[in-house]
Image 1 (cartoon, rainbow, N blue to C red):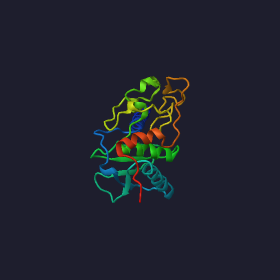
Image 2: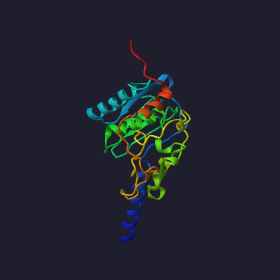
Image 3: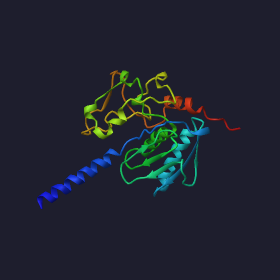
Image 4: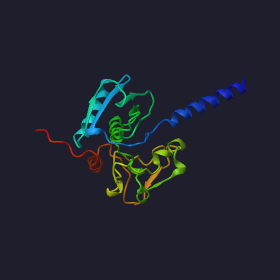
Length: 224
């Protein structure tokens, strides 16, 4: 009986770890831009009216600063699938990758901030703290990161823009807060190299976020 309970506990723990490992932003290759700045999307799952409004607000906010359009379509291959999950799970594919373009819409936290962060990934933006020169600006404490999330801190080269051409943005919507995925919830996973600078994601699309996305898609087109 005791052995049976131990085995059951082990598999429940293993299952829990497998679920945890699926959280976070998925950076899938290849990373491409959406043709003509048009992002077809559809919703899958039981969204509340409030959640739909937040999603659409995030889309309008991105549309107001760069030349892109989100267009709702019936479910089809190649469209951006925004799917509701029951867990505190947020993730997105990056750019238009001709395969599984999607956002996992979870629960918890500042929903609007999560939405515009994931939409930033959908447009082709990577995490600010993963840019090639990030070690000049932040120190990553690998030992403090939950192991299954470490890939979200690995340096990546974005083929759509040269991120080193831009000032490092500690306030970027694409930057993680300093305790993100902390192994104990208390220890920092990142700190600024410059003690006068603070990692402080503002929860809005910053000017530097706009500059990067504009390089990919251009500025918004003035309506006549």
